Length: 288
Image 1 (cartoon, rainbow, N blue to C red):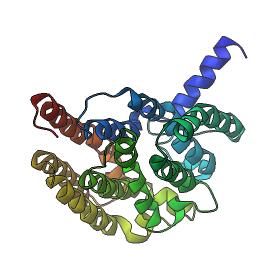
Image 2 (image 1 turned 45 degrees about the vertical axis):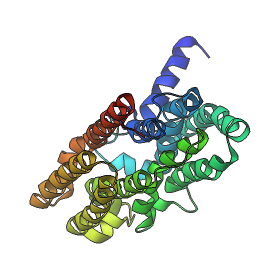
Image 3 (image 1 turned 180 degrees about the vertical axis):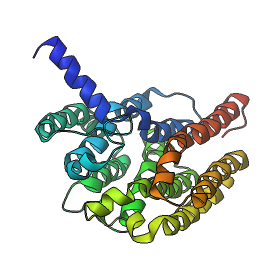
Image 4 (image 1 turned 120 degrees about the vertical axis):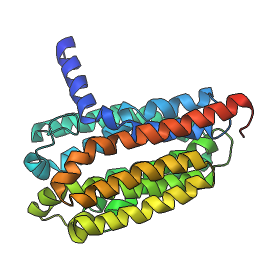
């Protein structure tokens, strides 16, 4: 394989991994480290690296392989929001997933505490079977949304790997937040999913019903965050409230699509606030 071809394959795999969404995996790992009361530990490096290309390629590569039919009809695919792959790329994607993830899996099995293995295994398997048969959570009502609680699992296994106990209010809050955001983002795909005969929670509930579902889980998330930090809870409530109210004013998949760029920014903003407060607390001796 020539250098040029290698570069093109790697660039394609990076595109498929959706770098703009890496924050959803990388952010919880970083926060998981800081919640231990330490800004940096070398033992966390493997988790940080895994949460970039390897794990996101696992999530979105599997998703793209099994969603080729719906992606072909989805106008927002093919850009930064997600790739539109050809059937001939499936083998390359699978090889890329194996080659990038296997070293980390072996490291976790042989060089980390046994207590993290059930959590890391659940983290991977839930996202694999979100898209892959026979389970395919994304096509199962309620489970499509609830399965996204797995995004919060680094707040459990990263502290355990570093010899600390998880902060459960943070973990449960992020689980609820992830459930809400998945449902909110799924509204924009209602028409494409319905056309492909995929009955997601958003398809079943409709726009307004899905907004009620998302609102409930964002309220739960805000309550959990408030147990740890009122400013973080307030920021979460303000952004979530603005997204919900904005879509209620234009309750259509098109309206959801117009708000998606703000939904993408949501974890960047709220995560930055939480991170800055944690760093300030650690440096100032107020945390833990």
